Length: 204
Image 1: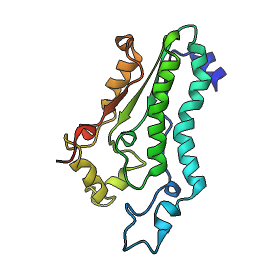
Image 2: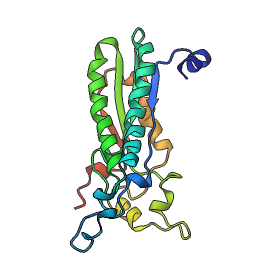
Image 3: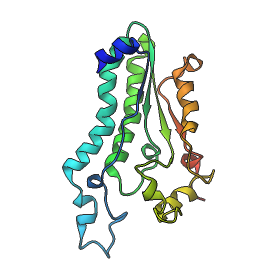
Image 4: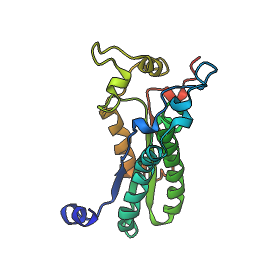
């Protein structure tokens, strides 16, 4: 893949690591273990499929590590900008999705580690933590397929987002362009939330 990219586009100086996703096998059906459901732990943390958990973690975390290993070497003599796509889950975990949340938190840590590691060779490493955007993957988790109304989970998210709506894809572009350009050439090791205020709101 690297040879093909270099042949068609030349050596890169901007790398966006956007691998991500979740799976039912890495998801708990119940938000909490309670006295009422404790007899059936299959829907809790204890019922998670280990391979499913590992698959989701690797997709998100190693899906960031591996492209950086492959492409950042070409930046060593010329500098560059690496932008990792994290998630609001990295700050405030969501119930039911432990593998995804853990992987995104790991990406934040890796972003800061790499920022320090590459600082002397003019490679900047930052991350963006999007809030909640409707995608093909989560649309019918957050909205009702038939009515289009918010589900219980969708309502929880919107009620904790001060701007009171989901984000639009183009609203991530500004942060991407900023971190990719020389305007931010003294910025490295940060995680930028694009979340409508979700990370700032305590719920009170």
